[in-house]
Length: 181
Image (tube, rainbow, N blue to C red; front, top):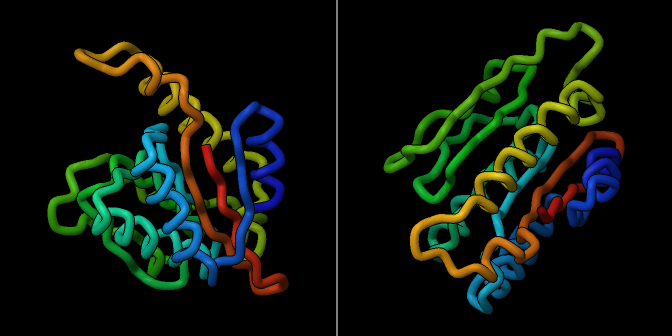
């Protein structure tokens, strides 16, 4: 997730990296920012245990009334369901057990993307340049959608940096990536 955060920053997108075990604190910060009026798109990404953590984080944010624009789990360790507050899920996985399902009230876009590349496995899936490109395109598309004028939109909303967090956990370094876009 560190590599992806570097790519995001290079593209002018704010990115923060945090340990997967810290997801609740990161979520509380997002909630505080949202309640303070920062209404940019929230994007959560994580790898392995971090992928599980971002799904829990999205659910928690929903309980607090905070919408999430995109969740990108990289090969989580257990199945999850997308929650009603999430607009899009791009689930990148190698193991069938990591598929995401539609939870109650979820009406968003759900993509379960099986990574067929034999050179990509659970331990390096979050470092794949091809997957980074896919994620960057998805994030840019969300940014463009947010920037389009909408009926009765507050003009200052489109200019705010997006609040976001994600968690990543790799087995060799128990860290999570909080990516704020």
